[in-house]
Image (cartoon, rainbow, N blue to C red; front, top):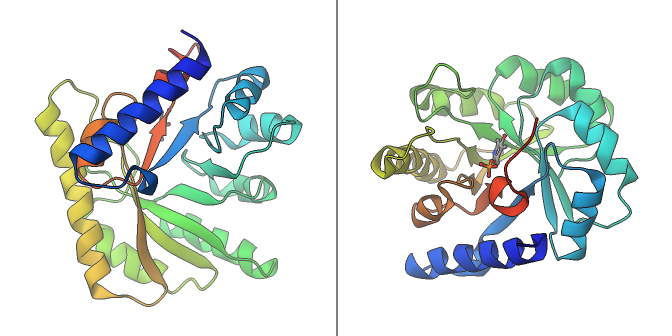
Length: 231
Ligand SMILES: *Cc1c(COP(=O)(O)O)cnc(C)c1O
């Protein structure tokens, strides 16, 4: 199957999952995760109406994005951000950073932003599966984390992100997403200054339909679009 076919199929599956959940398909952003993919493959995706691309390593993004001839609307950074890579990442002008989970990183990012008189939209990554191998703030610590990060004036917290457990058990996956959505709603209700609960980034190739049922409005999809990754 061609990349164009895969893109069409995934858009259809996203739309069907939205309709099934009584949601408007237009409210769900399809982020094409282009990590490990070549410049040629990304160009082809852009020719086939992919508008939003996500990368998880600063150096890889730096090697690829500036050489792209095709236009993309938004670049999202979805990987773990090391504080010594902040400058390089910011040169790539990410629309959204999905994966802030440490106050020290948020603080360093804020300092960079202040010095350059700019602001940055970010999401807080939450470890909803409880696995040690995963990054993210613990669900129970998320509200306190957000309250302290809300003091960082050049950072705009726009929502939450999670990665569910890698399992075939749909109910375990769903419980991760429900947990994130409940946190999202809880924080939204509090109306904290400088915090807007707008984006709920959850769902990947294996679980995006469940994520959409649970309220996701950004799905991050790599494998289902581009095939298995070859590292
Ligand atoms: C790789 C990656 C994805 C995409 O995963 P697929 O299973 O290939 O769709 C989504 N989110 C993050 C944070 C990733 O690192």
